[in-house]
Length: 204
Image (cartoon, rainbow, N blue to C red; front, top):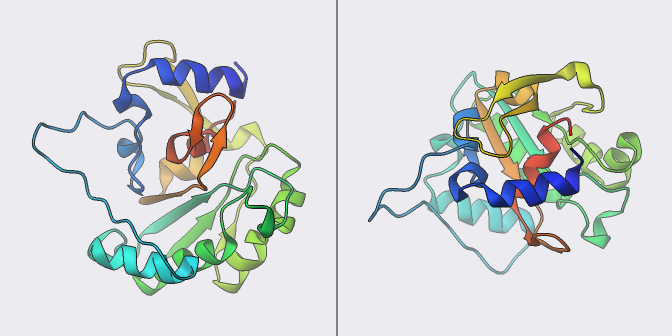
């Protein structure tokens, strides 16, 4: 199954199979339905640089320490899919990624990993997106995701069209997963945000 087919089939699943918590562990990737009357946590911030808006938004949600605990391993998953400079807006803002990695370490994270299963050549994407350098400044660890041996097959609970998926081992083995997409229009989904960014954690 190619990536385009993945999008189309995923959209046919229940909304809960596609929903992903921005912060959490692997169980949150396929979440249970939200109960009636329970409001999801959400903070919307406008104005300022990407790092400034993140700082305001995460504070509204209780601060980074509400999600990252001392000694935990963290995976930050931006969109680094394209060999394009930051000003193109094709990938996640590198300054935002840098801020998140810094805050995770400030919260006591043991290690902070960053990766994406890119569409263009991974080395070019990592470098030209500006994200590799941003992660280096924040003392994070950039990890390649282009080899199948780094993926593990997992079941998709409640899956109808997709029963299993090959997920990057860091997603399965780390304590905290932070999904950092970039909002864009898309030919198949119309709007690409967090769900589609999860395509970068699977093999195909």
